[in-house]
Image (cartoon, rainbow, N blue to C red; front, side, top):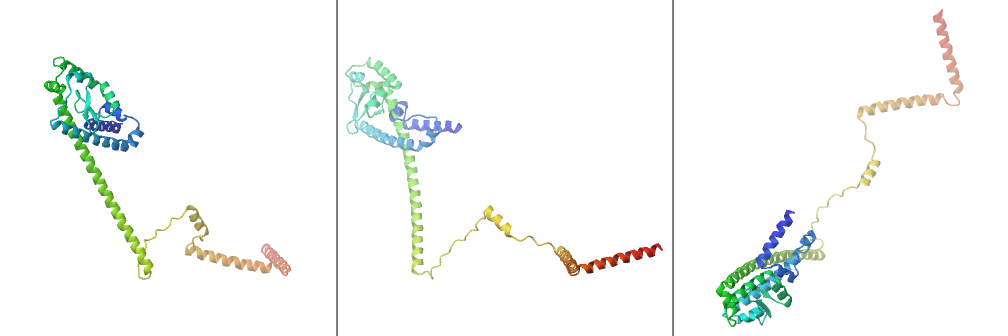
Length: 294
C-alpha cells in the first residue's frame, strides 16, 4: 500500500514538472489506474510515450518562446480576444495558443475544446473580461494583461516549468546514453568470445594433435533413489567380527561331524547294527542297576 502511495506521489511530481494537468492527460489519453497490473505492466510504455510527447512540447514551446522574444507582438485586439481568446501561434508548426492562458500549446480542435471548458481558463477569462471593461476595444489584449501583471507572472511560471522540463529530459537522455553504452560494451565482449571460440575450433581442425583443448571438469552425476535401492540390494551383507567368525566355523565343523556319524549309522545297511547297539546299551544299563540294588 505504501509503495503504491509513494509511486503515485512521484508520478504526480513528474507530471507537475512536465506541466501535465488533468485536461492535457485527458487529451493525451493518460488515465490514472489503481490496479497493480496497470501500474507494473504499462509503466515502461507510458513513460516512453510521455517522454516523447514532452520532448516535442518542449521543442515547440522553445520555438514559440524564441519567436516571442525576437520582438514579435501578438496582434490580437481586446474585441477579438473577447470573441475567441484562442489564436494561431505558429504557421510552421500549425499550433494555436490562448491569450489569457500564456504558455498553453493547443494542437488540435479537441484540445481547444477541452481547454476552453477547463476551470482555470474560465477563471482567467473572467478576469480578462473585467480588465477589458476598462480598456478600449481596439487595444491589444496582451498590453491589457501586461498592465495587470498576470501575463508576466504566467510567463515566468511557464518559463520555469519549461526549464524544469528540459532538465528532466536531459537527465533521461543521459540515462539512455549510459544504457546504450553498457549494451555496446556487452555486445563487444560477446563478439570477442565468439571470435576466440572460432579460432580455437579452427586450430583443432587444422592440427588436432598439437591443439590442447582443456575440457572442463565433469561433475559426478547424482544417483536417483531407484539406482541407490538397486545397488544396495546386490551388495553382500557386512562381514561379522573375527571372534564371531571363529565360533561360527567351529560350530559348523561340529555339526558336519555329527551329521557324518548319523549318516553312517542311519544308512539302510546298518539299521540292524544300530538296533543291536541299542539293545546292548539297555542290557548294560539294566545290569548296572541290578548291581547297585544288590
